[in-house]
Image (cartoon, rainbow, N blue to C red; front, top):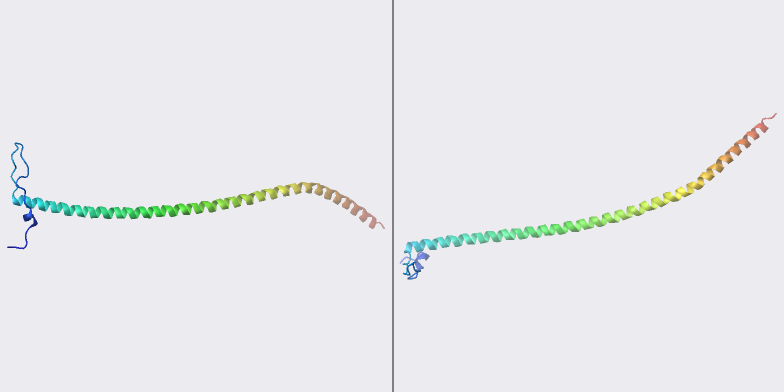
Length: 143
């Protein structure tokens, strides 16, 4: 006896596989047809396992890619939030400094209004000093 037997040899077809349209039992298929069916089933099983492994690998890759994208999105949102917070602080600081500048300009403007009167008084004094200087010069030059 040969120890290397085909697994299809162990497959025994039942005495009747079914019934034909007249209700008579159908004969079992020939042994070589049974072997080819078993071999085809083995090929289908092998291909199915390969497809299952491919799908498993694909889903693992997709899961990893989704995790990376989610992580990156989370990091980008955190970065955006930090940048927006810093921008808000800078805008508030600039607005505060701008308000101080405007108030300083308004105070200076109010102080400058008083300077107009002072300038008019200084002009008047200068005119009087010039007149006095001219009079003194005339007195000093008299011989």
